[in-house]
Length: 203
Image (cartoon, rainbow, N blue to C red; front, side, top):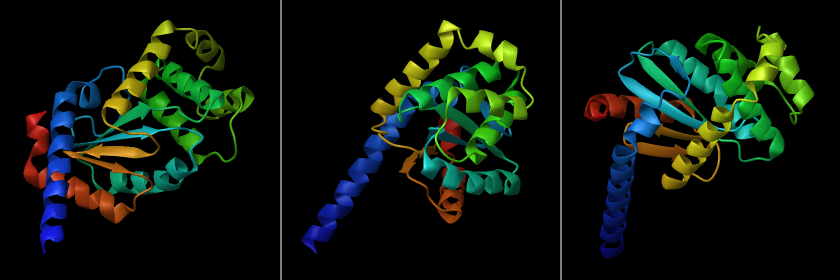
């Protein structure tokens, strides 16, 4: 009984620490104008995902996220490029952020193509996927040189470190951080919890 009580106290303390960190970083997490936004920009609950385009688990959870957004039209989705799997991941993230300069919808289209891809990425593949997503590839090549893109990625890496996020995918939903390719039931449960607690009103 004592061990169970101690375990519950430790879990409650961990949840409280997570909540405090999320509130302290709320603007970076939920309101950073440099982070692309999908879903319903005016949604009452925000999902933040840290992801890597070469992460097989990110690609596994991607269809679940698409279904979640399709089923719930009141969700706002924030994309956090978090390239931790090598140079190709960094280049893919930079290309995605450069794609956003052609519009939020172009970014989302590019993201979908990249997440549907299989195998390791190369620069040639990234440009091919950009073309498939309807992007102006020549403009993309120019925009890739923008120094602000590297700064955006550095900020995401620092934010993830502050949240003790070490791998991908990782999600922030309400006052909870969940790691890994979680199932759609878990995602829906966290969304409903955030909605019921009214956590979004604190942001």
